[in-house]
Length: 136
Image (cartoon, rainbow, N blue to C red):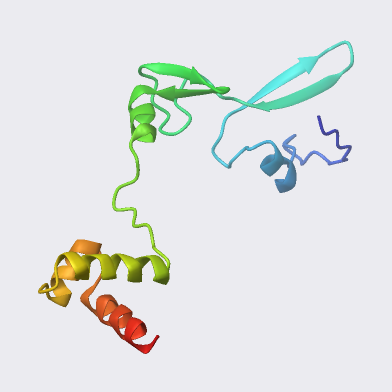
């Protein structure tokens, strides 16, 4: 636990400004609720971000489950399980060129557009790969 000692003056209305660095460290944003704890024996005031009973992502209060210290609703849990769509894995030139050669052996009469569709790349990329292979 990090302890920091700072001195701040109260304004005329009795308010205290908490430094931005402390707020960032405690993961407190401008509209978050904060809990106050008062220990009368030691005259200590403690602050803590109020979590409440809501989803960490969407603040829903329906169908919550506890996961690694946070409450997450059923719909957000479902969304987190869905893999990202349209994620294109870029292949190195050598691998893509070899895949193109393999396709050319299987389909020698195919057009560049057909090769591009089979490999999931653009027609111009197929043309570039063919030029690089012919230069080598």
